[in-house]
Image 1 (cartoon, rainbow, N blue to C red):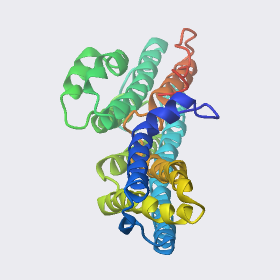
Image 2 (cartoon, rainbow, N blue to C red):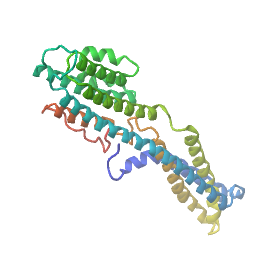
Image 3 (spheres, helix red, strand yellow):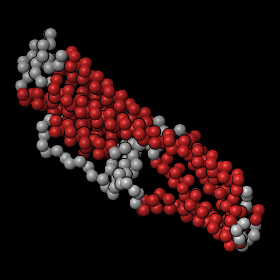
Image 4 (tube, helix red, strand yellow):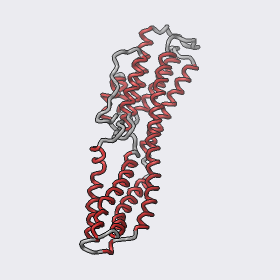
Amino acid sequence: MYIRENLRWHIIWKLGWKSVVIFTVYSALICLIYGPLKIHSVAIPWQPVATLGTAVAFYIGFKNNGSYDRFWEGRQLWGGIVNSSRTSAVQILEFITSVVDAPGVDAPPASAEELTHRHRRMVYRQIAWCNALRIHLRRQPEQWDAAVAPFLEEEESEQIRVLANPPAQLIRQQAAALRKLREERGLLNDFQHVTMMNTLEVLYNLQGGCERIKNTPFPRQYAFFSMLFVYLFTAIMPLGLVTEFAKMGPLHIWLTVPFSVLVSWVFSTIETVGHNSENPFENNMNDVSMTAICRSIEIDLRQMLGETEVPPKLEPVEDILY
């Protein structure tokens, strides 16, 4: 996610230099044909061009609204993941404290070492789930060893990493751990167990929302025709502008080039901005900063465990927070 208030000029140029070059050459060619070559039949009235421009502006505005909604929904889902991860950690630390009155459970009291081990293992599994969901959405399985494996026991990590949906399986493992705490160790009563299972359900719903955005591409009919209409408008605009500038004098027709390039660049940029916002989980410049969010979750949860040596928050790289 780009966090600087204003875009740097090299980014603006990187996004638009191809279209600027193409529009400049095309507009100059139209002026050459209309002026020195005196082929006036290429010109068209300005009124239909203006009408088409208005229609295209409305259409790409509609498309960009839809694209931004996808990004914002993705960010809201990850905001929910932050809150639910904190809630899950608090429940682990506050509910799993001592033996409760569990009928049918004949287990020795849990030692402080056992409780600490269980707290750490389950909280770390929650951190692992956040990172596993991130690399699952970005299709980066090669990052498993660095992002997920350190928070899991080796056997559990190797078993889950080869499955089709590792984050879903991690929540399943968390649910199995809760069942064992209630049935075998008596460390959870029924109310606590149900409450913590509801939190896991919330995590599943948040993961499902992210997967829905990831696996459902932006409707191609909107994206394709938006791009097509922009190209069509920018192609005929110099044909209308050259007529208007010719009324001011024979040399004024060359003003078609800068004005045509400017308007074409604006429409092209709007189209590009909408296209870049369609898929918020691709690890691009304007996507949801899932890596930084996962690091923030890790810091919060490890400090809840009482750890003091935690990694620092991620800093933006060239104004981009990944």
